[in-house]
Image 1: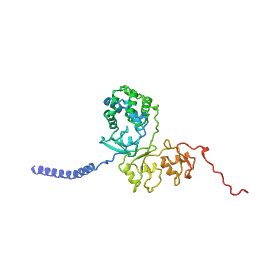
Image 2: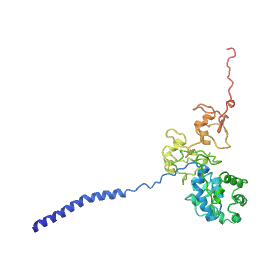
Image 3: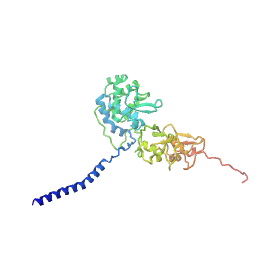
Image 4: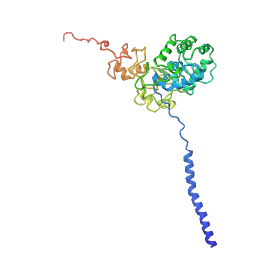
Length: 357
């Protein structure tokens, strides 16, 4: 009997060892699987063009929260943000979450970005979040001695606040106050100063939105340490440097492999040229205001002109009633915003070689 019990116990020990030998590899494999590091690469931020209605809906709570904390009217806060950031669509807003155009100044210790404004390459404050921008704007106004008189005004007197900001020199524009007042009244932002709310009708557009959707502007990183990001025709672009390739720029900006080719209307792999404009967002259907036409210079092509103004080359051909593939002549006037009228097309007088025929 003792022999049988001992035999069973020994076999139990052997079976336990065998099970352990079988389980150990499974545990190791399991551990190895868990130890495989997950990708730390964050998806590139997606940007869409906001109109004023969308901006208000997105950021009104921040403005109201700051009004309660700092006593700056929510209507003024929103109007300034929309005016200074182009409804959140400006390069500075996307690149640095700076919605109020506040420059660095000597006291600023936070993040910085450089952008052309009154002078080239000026220093602007960079924030981690939009709310940080809203808070800093409040602090900037509240702690600025030249703005102190504003807090003696009624928090519901948005007109006096707007005029006071202009008087204190917040912006150089002589119509700054009237622009703020118009934004506030067009969009009824004064309701927020009085503790009310707006019921947006999804079928209606807020007055003076002035923007169309840019549906395919996504999957790109707007800020880069190596290449400075410029803006033309409300499109961000970089200048090609010596040694740049599509691959290294794509990796640096966190873009998809096809985006640079598509946005710059390039087919096939080509060598980049130092000084070349390379858009990191899609080009538009027409040039920005103030650039109605272009007089062709020697060496220019339809493609180089489309890159110069940020216009899709197909649209440039269409506006000038030209066949795709044709090139302009030196001195020719190319329309950039509207379609050339037939009366504007100069017909060449045919040259008759032999009058007797």
